[in-house]
Each structure stands twice: as C-alpha cells, then as structure tokens.
Figure (cartoon, rainbow, N blue to C red):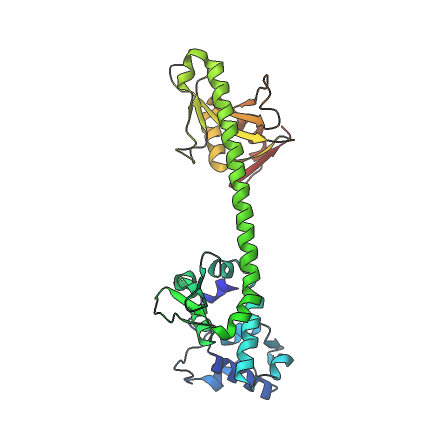
Length: 322
C-alpha cells in the first residue's frame, strides 16, 4: 500500500477528508466527476492539491464505489460530524490496513523507535520516512498522530500523548513481533555461520592431511572474500605448482541438502574440473575416520541437467538427494 503513496504529492488533510466524506454522504448520486467539480480551486488548510483524495479513502474502505456512484461506509456516516472521532477512525483504518505492509514495518521498526525519559514520549526518527514517504509523514502530522520534538531535535518526531494508547495497541505489537523475529533470524544466521566455519576448518585439516608436504598451500579465503564463489584454495596433489583446487564447503545434517548461490554456480561452470564441492555431515564430522563427500566439477555432475530447460537465471539453487 505505502508503495503507492510515492506517486502523489498530498494525501489530504483531516478537514478536507471529513468534508469530502460529508458531501458523499449527503449526495446519494455523486460520482468522481462531482467531487472534482466541487473541490476545484478550493484551498483547504492552506493546500489545494489533493491528488489521491478518493483513491486513498476507497483503499481504506471508508468510501465505496459501485457503478460509478460513491457511497460512504455506514460506520463513518455516524461520526463525520465529530472531527476528533473522524480523525481517530481514519487513523485506525490506516494502521489496520498497513499492519502487513513491509515498508510500514521498516518505518516503524525498533531501530527507528525510542523513548524520551525526560519528556516521557515515544520518539521516531524523522529520517525513517525518507523523502519517498514524506507525504505519509505529513498525513500523520496533519492528523496530530505525530508532531515535532519538543526539544527541537530535527531528526526526531514524537507520538502525541493522546495517541499513545493507539500506538501501543496498533503499532507496538507488530514492532515487538518483528523485533523478536529479527532476533530469531539473527540467532539462526549466527548458528549457520558457526556451523559453516566448523565445516570449513574441518576441510582445512582434511586437505592439509591429504597434501602432506604441500599443506602450506591450503588457505581459507571465505573470511576475506565472501563473494568469491568458493571458500578454500588448495591443490589437486603434491605435484601441483600452484593452488589449482577451488573448494566450496557445504554442511548438512540428517540428509544431504544445501543451497548454491548464482556466483558459486558461475564459478563451478568457469573452473570446471578445478572446482569441488566438499559436503560435510555435521553429525559425523567429529568421528575419527570420517571423510567428506567430494564432488568434482559439480556444474557438469549435478547442475547442468538442472539448468537445461531454464530460460532465466535464478539467485539461489537448492540441491538435495545427491
């Protein structure tokens, strides 16, 4: 929904929207043409451009359009005479509609929200809206949900005290839920990184033992070059004159399943017989005699057939049941 906001200069002020709703309620056969004619050259709250006025209300289910005829939601018909109640219900509709919007979540995220213990107010970074959504920020200011910080901080807005309860009920649960999800995701990624590092260190030791006198040519590069498309440089044999084996390490548990990025696939395609996949079973790797599953030239052996009928590139390949 918020993505559509970028197209318009103004979303409308409370006074304008309530007057618009009142006219639609009073005129049973009004169309969009009638609305445009009525508000032509009108200046309301010092503004005269309301280029998303009707689409905005229809999107919030406040105004309905059937066979070209506009009608007002019956619940709003009861409150349009009271500006405060009207403002509250419009804000409720906005937050209800936006609760599943990713951009809205990014704006009202835990990274952008803070609490001023001196003024006892909830703060939000002004910059969180970015220029693209400044009209949405202005709408929230016009409806008095947000206002400038009392201490004059340029990059801080505050949630007005009369709307603190609405913020706590409508926005805070989503903020908390997303924060917990991000924490869980962070833990999951950290665990994956730890498991990946263990597998790579296992391969380092395996390669050093395999090469013997050439063990100094085994080098782990993944910490320095994340996008290389391989994790370890090694040699095919003790007779190699340079590092000629490019190893991508993947670990798994219970069943063989892993992801390959487009860059890893490209490296496998380019390097052919010099590119290897080392698949490490995390449940077995600590056993004394364990050896990794090694796949030479995986592009030919497991990827080429998979790509034969593809007409477009993809970013990630899921490989299982090798």
